[in-house]
Picture 1 (tube, one colour):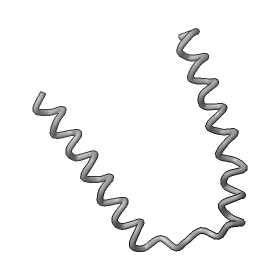
Picture 2 (cartoon, one colour):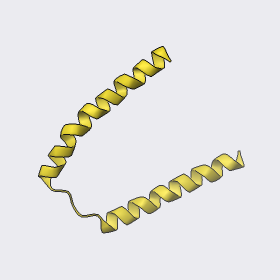
Picture 3 (cartoon, one colour):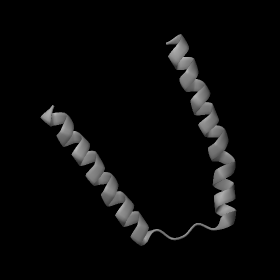
Picture 4 (cartoon, one colour):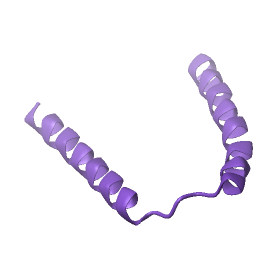
Length: 59
């Protein structure tokens, strides 16, 4: 149980570090680039959900 808490603590600490660094050093994304990413992101999330359902019911 202690190992699980240690791993979770390390994951959350790493995530907090990444958020802080990216917030400080990342440049803002242009609206055109955001639309371009969104055009790919929505279908890929849908595909991921469908493949996850197939894996759940078949596998």
